[in-house]
Length: 446
Image 1 (tube, rainbow, N blue to C red):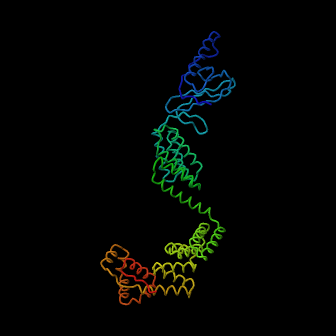
Image 2 (cartoon, rainbow, N blue to C red; image 1 turned 90 degrees about the horizontal axis):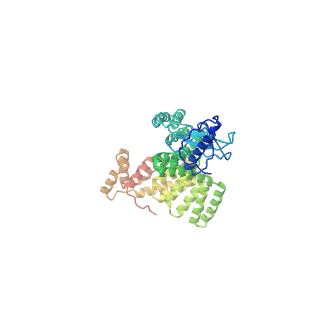
Image 3 (cartoon, rainbow, N blue to C red; image 1 turned 180 degrees about the vertical axis):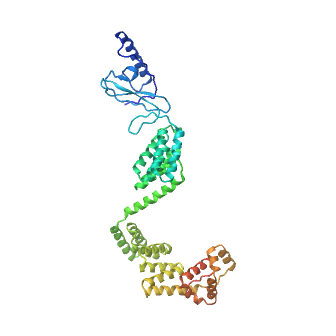
């Protein structure tokens, strides 16, 4: 099947077939002149026919012909197109196509583009869109596209309005059609912004449909065409959603229990790195199991990775706030990094959950004893003063009359540290002062 060249050719008039017989030779000659002209200007297809009154019909000499349609090139004038198909006398209909895009549904439409009027319609549509009057916006964007059907921006805008209404299928049709319009233009005439916007619209549509990998693909193509600031943010959201989707698909409580059991066995054998791997797999398979998080925290504790263990223990008590073993593990590791304030809070939380708990009482006593042993004066007051002045929180604590009284009391009687450490508000402030060096820490006795 060949495609006809885009060449406009004149249709020479022919006298009516009701003329006397003496004119038949002349008419036949004229017909062959017309057909010869068509053959010269169109090498991609062979047109054989007889043109009658005003060039309205062409009768095919070889019977019905296959349909050949000529694509319209912008601003080239009207084209005469032969359409094959039997019309009752073995011929084919001769139709004319003019400027403008075909109507939806396949009908041709003669429209002289009016970009100025189209832009006015677009502005009215934009105002309606920002007011969330999507039906009105769609009406004006549709009118704008009718006035200038080569401008893909109007379809992109209408797609946005459809997205606002939740009509994702209609929005996708418009965004894809906008892409086709721009891609059909010569490279130098393509609108990079319109192409970028079409791809980003499709990214939004696919994200809303839950097809995050497809959304990422469209967002990447959008960035290649034109860098809209919001596109990168939207792509990151799709990437996060895709990651979460994959994590959800990986969840399997039964396989989590199997991995946890293997991890417990390895932990008992002292193979902590291998146990850590199995607990990690168990967490991936069931991330809502507080016990698995606490077990991995125990592995980190054995491997002296206390800060990583703290994160896991905090996750365990977040999932189950009444999990005593989680609070106990958290208190031990905070004590291990000498964060006595948080360690003491963890042990006190155990006592709240289970009043009189022996481990909770021992942990609290351990923290208070260590705090009393660590209180002392700063070795370099000038350096400490610089750090305090550079830290607004520390400066505020130092200017607090209550804390000034506490510091004087600690300086004269370090044994009172246990009393102050039992107060969560004061203990936090003391911890801050320890960090900046106002209160110097010393190793706790063995």
